[in-house]
Length: 151
Image 1 (cartoon, one colour):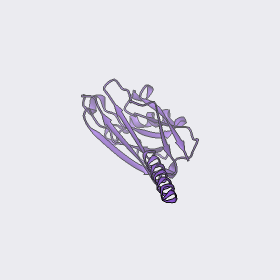
Image 2 (tube, rainbow, N blue to C red):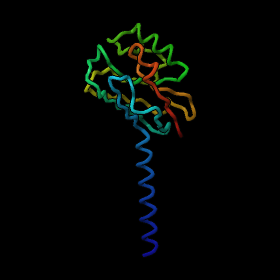
Image 3 (tube, rainbow, N blue to C red):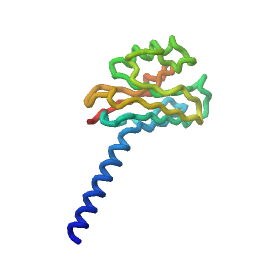
Image 4 (cartoon, one colour):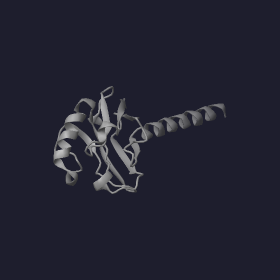
């Protein structure tokens, strides 16, 4: 009986560890009409086969006036990506098409809408300096955060 209890405890711990890893594969963010994300830091595992970004715009304004998205790149590329995004325009979600500096991005959504996007976890390296931000013109100055990547 003692061995069976230990085996069940070990299996429960393994199951909990697997669930903890799975939760590290999704970035859940909310943004509002005040140009703020609800998180300043998000953590994901580079060991995830796929990482998903789930974004909800909790404001009320239309995407043409106060649209938001989530873009992930190296922190050092944020300024150049947002500048190129202005030229790309809303039709391209303020993300330059085919830009290798962009690791992933969602579509631009307005108040009350949600969006999601996925990308391979191996696009991120543990310890890298990554950022998530909104590329709508002018938003990235305050609507940004740090993406921490673990193994």
